[in-house]
Length: 185
Length: 96
Image 1 (cartoon, rainbow over the protein chains, first blue to last red):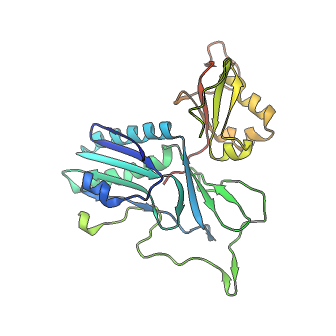
Image 2 (cartoon, each protein chain N blue to C red):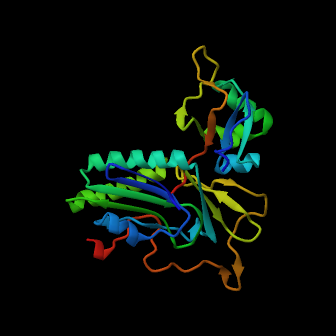
Image 3 (cartoon, rainbow over the protein chains, first blue to last red):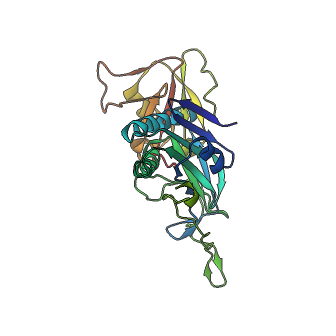
């Protein structure tokens, strides 16, 4: 069961389950900004991500962001849900859905909500590079490499017979930018 | 996460997340209360060498879910952490 708060047309939640875009969009239908997990950082292949959270604090921050954006862009409603625990590469880690009488406002609000979330919500991402290299806590603030969790060799991609092994991008995978869902427009 | 564990009498709970948890190898512990907030980082640095430069200098602190300012030097009217409070070290976030 996810932890969630629902208040004044704002819905926020943290969950270890798969993010179900359809379920959220059924609640709030207009447009969504899902973020899928990236497959590399600075060329180093990432095996999986693990998110942890200070849940009660994070839910409060998410609710504050949603309420502010709801009012600023005169939205009908807004939902923000973040996945926790281990998230395999290319699966969605965050889902923001907004509903608005005006499409332009909805797009702006979705983008702003995502930016605010990445700046402020008390969720932390650990990137696992696989093997004995351990994980690295990422910081959104500067995009620089975070703090190494375990001691080990210098991080570098696994070497295959033809050089570093980098998983090919999945079609539609675009880091954390807004992804257009044609059927939502 | 042991935020639900209640601190014993005369103590407060401190929660460590992300890099703070890695550095201390703990997710939480109990510290004797009361403690003026300006003494928190020096106390933690004593206990975990290198903690301040590596983690604390770039972290924020919440007490009972609200962010509090950490003065550089002790002041007369500074925030005092009380028995039973829940304090958390908040390293730079990385959601999304």
